[in-house]
Image 1 (tube, rainbow, N blue to C red):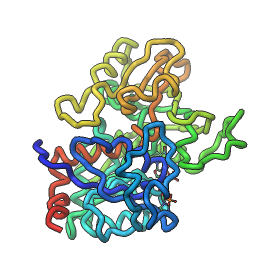
Image 2: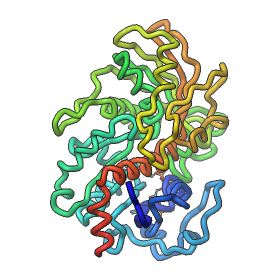
Image 3: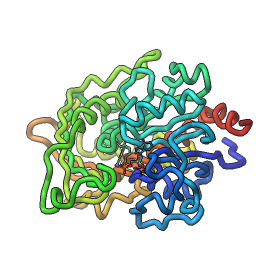
Amino acid sequence: MAINSKLPVGILGATGMVGQRFIQLLENHPWFEVAWLAASDRSSGKTYGEAAKWRLEFPLPERIAQMTVRPNEPTGAPKIIFASVDAPIAREAEPAFAAAGCAVISNSSAFRMAANVPLVLPEVNADHLHLIEEQSWRKEAGGYIVTNSNCTAMGPVLALKPLDDLFGVEQIFATSMQAISGAGYPGVPSMDILDNVIPYIGGEEEKMEAETLKLLGKLEGNVVKPLGARMSASCNRVAVVDGHTVSISIKLGKPATKEEILAAWAGFKPLAGKDLPSAPAQPVEYATQDDRPQPRLDRNRGNGMAATVGRLRPCNVLDWKFTVLSHNTVRGAAGAAILNAELLASLGKLEPVAETAAHA
Ligand SMILES: NC(=O)c1ccc[n+]([C@@H]2O[C@H](COP(=O)([O-])OP(=O)(O)OC[C@H]3O[C@@H](n4cnc5c(N)ncnc54)[C@H](OP(=O)(O)O)[C@@H]3O)[C@@H](O)[C@H]2O)c1
């Protein structure tokens, strides 16, 4: 694909935890350039440097710090929008941007389970993008909504996909240990999380179960048929800043040896040769050490885009068990959305909206 000049993109929810990751990951991106930032009325009209409580180790780029934060409205916005606002806000805002002809690439849960909205992880179900053609915004104005999954589902789904392809996955038991950045900023109060584990994250278990099965589902015509596996998720908040860890047990449709499972992960490179800038060369990395993966040591593998799997061993109840770690605001949010946008660009699905932008 030839992209001669960078496509202007906007970030809705730019001041939040995921918005900040967007800014980090889009700085020097070869295809996209941040041209517009928006957040709530509290931030609108201020410079980004004034409005955002910058929380990343990566320094805030001076050009971005000087940009004015815009209101949450499509007027004057670029035609490619990365959205990272909470679901109640997304429910109103994302359709308004799509109706205005924008490609909305969303992190929110608001539309993930809608029948005509693709929930996509490029390595897993790129073909589900076809669903955008079913959206009325696309037919009427060129715009559409594409979503990525809940940050906790993303790592496990990457690990499960090659196993499902080769052996079939019939049952999944998953217990998460989720980082505090997953709750946004300022998120969980320090008095609640230090020296503690919180065994409840509202709505998270239901999202993890439903989204995992939709991501691993099959597109049949214009409908996604979810994977027919049974899944039980338990979600916990732990005192980690970034990186969600999930312990998983699975029952397979046919027997697999340890060597076959390791080979399935090692050979899982569905985006090889597509030259998507954010795609990790090895989406599922296996850590051989007994005490890995660990958030602090493994979350930045593949520039934060790889899922690290370890501790593959037989399960006395189901067939196999293992541990998966992924970076929740990179692979689980901003990085996933940027990879979705790169996939859309490579398929020519950003072209109409980009052309509209160029002629606006
Ligand atoms: N954190 C993660 O690991 C993660 C992973 C996957 C998905 N997500 C999803 O991504 C979304 C954002 O999460 P986050 O962690 O970045 O949350 P956050 O840190 O709380 O940030 C929320 C953002 O939304 C903006 N906002 C609030 N009200 C608004 C309004 N009425 N109009 C426009 N913008 C408004 C905020 O702007 P102000 O600064 O002006 O208030 C801020 O920029 C959520 O849907 C979340 O579920 C998060």
